[in-house]
Length: 319
Image 1: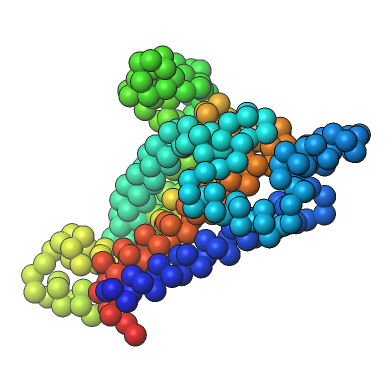
Image 2: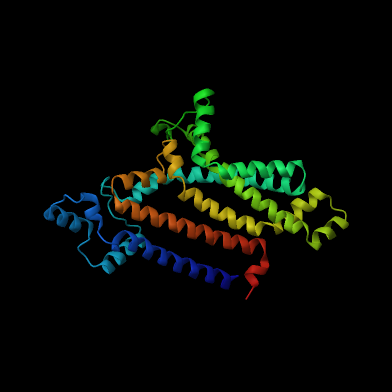
């Protein structure tokens, strides 16, 4: 197990290093620079030189890269151009919305997908299976921002159960509270989860059907286990490897793919921060947010690898 962890940690660090180099190269080394993008073509040479000095663009690229990575390692980030605040503070404040939103959406996704996927597999080629697959195909075909608009029209405009957008905050000092904050995230979480649940339900169904054809399942049934006991006690665990793979990618996607939904519901999350930074040409914020999102994807994949080893001991003992 120790060797398994060391290998995964080495792969994690190497991937983060490569990702940081790619992010830096795309935003820093392509033709033009951040100062020219921010000031535009009409900028004077003096103002351009002053902004380049402020952003550190007058230094060699290798020095800028090592300073950036060293600052991230020490927890020190650059100042945002448009907000004049360290990007770590901006991102940390926005994560208070995006992380709970992603967690709620992922919880809904997993509960719906596992329930519907196992239900469809247990009724293979019957009405329940056809109904779940048809609903899943519809969920995949419709984009989440369209679901978001429909949810707003139904629950916020017609029924008026929740607000159409905005976020009141997690504390009473911010004008909200825990329950008010959760209510504001319910509709966005559902809008994000429906598409992901449709995909994961189809993957779960296929994986469960494949495992149900194995010999050990027939042996378990022959020993007296009911169909439900064999399904939930033996089949589902052995079908979890492909399900975990897709679920891990989906959780990373829920963090990185909230830009549209957060803008539909006017939520002050990371996705909206990226949108505003791009609009303001604040490439410092864009760079750090993109690096954070890349790190989230890598860390989620690392966590999925560890879950693989817990579910299937053969993987951690494999040479």
